Amino acid sequence: KGVERAAMEERVWNETVGGRENGGGLVGEEGTGEETNEEKADRETATGQVVVVDAGHGGNDPGKIGVNGVEEKQVNLSIALKLNALLEEQGITAVMTRESDTGLYEEDDDNKKQSDMAKRCQVIDDAKALLAVSIHQNSYTEESVKGPQVFYHAASQEGKKAAEYLQEALNTGLSVERQRSIKDNNTYYLLKNTSTPTVIAECSFLSNPEEAALIATEEYQEKVAEALLLGILSYINNS
Image 1: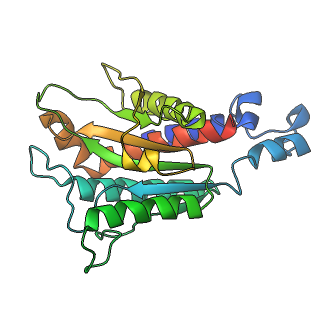
Image 2: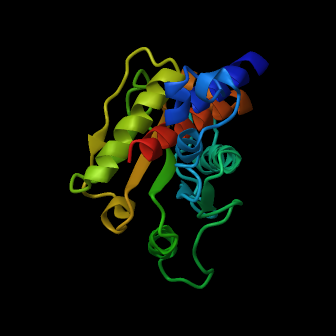
Image 3: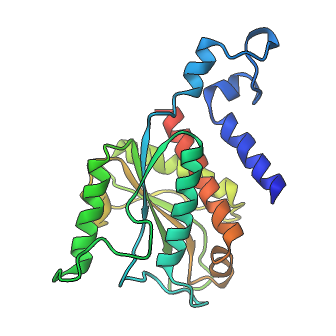
């Protein structure tokens, strides 16, 4: 696991312009080891940015239930918290829509689901973020279907761009055999009702026994969070 962590950190550095220019090394001009002004500017491209991390479902809404009994809301939250920590390590301000097993609604709300979704959209747009990533898990009637997939609103070019980077990072970071492509969607509430570029990352299929077992582990959740981080960094550094 330590080796994998080191490899991820190297990939994170290589996602910065300075890292690419110097072959992943932390050296300045003429190999002095000092950072040039240009390299400093490149390194700071990600800092000062805000990214919203949305852990889907929560509270009285468990989301999908895996074939192994795992609740989607708990998996989403665990990955979101890990991603939050990784973003903060990179100097990126992460705004969480929830940090515990709660929904974004009041107990006396007549329609808790609608209240919850409206509040999430408000948090996302109030943050004035560069990007919002909503973390979910998928499900299908056929158990054989698996693999992460990222959704975006068809009218959002920035959403599509972000989805492409996150999809590539998930496919690569999770060593997906049958890789999925991004998909536009005009019906998801979160995608329709935010002005911030927003993507929904369906990280696994809870209806697939193999992925349901993997996504329930801390180690695999960490790999998912690391892949999402790399996708976000790619989007930031190419925006």
